[in-house]
Length: 418
Ligand SMILES: Cc1ncc(COP(=O)(O)O)c(C=O)c1O
Image 1 (tube, helix red, strand yellow):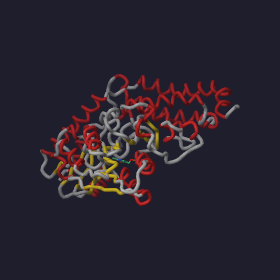
Image 2: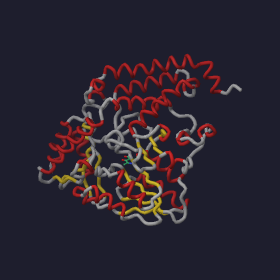
Image 3: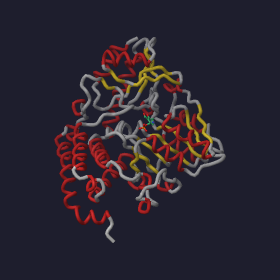
Image 4: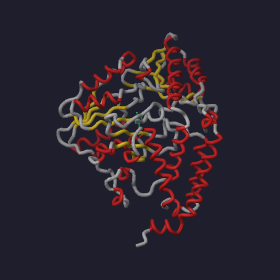
């Protein structure tokens, strides 16, 4: 029988492959010529950011490199030249497999454990709806959990019968906590009915890097069945190694630190754990995705140019070594911490050990409520950061990425002084 897919394959694969290869070569050539490919860190001129804007908010939403943007446009153009052919034809399969493999390399897992979703929030909705949970079961997380990783459980609890418990994390003690204390603060909350533990790898308020492996292993020893981690603020900022970590599920948003086009997500589902999860939606592809991780990413027609460009964003990031990336973030973090400690009227609200820190930290400016500080500094200096006013913290959350000039942080201290 000739299906639409086999017809396309036989009739048009050659033409489609050629056009796609052309589109991909645009990116390959651009990356070849790019400074990152020659071993340097990216710089602000490699991006589309308005040079007048001092952008210290990569934790909310990133910006894509010019070369990835150009490749994305090229894929869109190719697709729109014959949508029937380019949105479905088999020649995309190989490049899409490559995208998944690149994502899996970054997350330290296999491509058979990685679904391309739309964002972190979607990953948690899938889990809150699809895990085998019910009456008497408890989902546990701390007040550091992002609403995108908390609300899906809270919303589904009355319908599914499980209960949700959020415990108060001592946020104001974070600068002085040790790794062991962070682990212990979670583990002591676990009860016999706790079946799921959720925590952010790096939280979005003060940038506490949770000791993921120790937490996952400790939770399992205490009988927790599923460990679900929110990696929105971690992937491509710090090393992530999921295999052997004891984590069952890990959701991420590549539009932040991977610097991909918006509207894409990753969800890792450990091989042994994914069988337990029901998909949130099913599509026409269900018969041939059954039993594989693909059933969590096929919602009917998807935006393939965007997914291809995710592959290019990953390729761009792969050019930057993870150790170089971390030491750069650490250097900026240390510089900022020392600056805050040396300035009366400023207070550091984030961890003071790098092992527990990230490229996201929160600084209070005495006498200046953070929302007004943020709107004033944007109005007068085109400076962008996220104000954090919750859980006893009232500060500027600074989240520079690799291309952020040190001068932007210096400018923050010049103009935001108490
Ligand atoms: C820690 C954390 N989790 C989840 C989210 C939600 O991400 P998304 O809106 O891409 O699903 C964010 C967004 O800022 C975040 O910082």
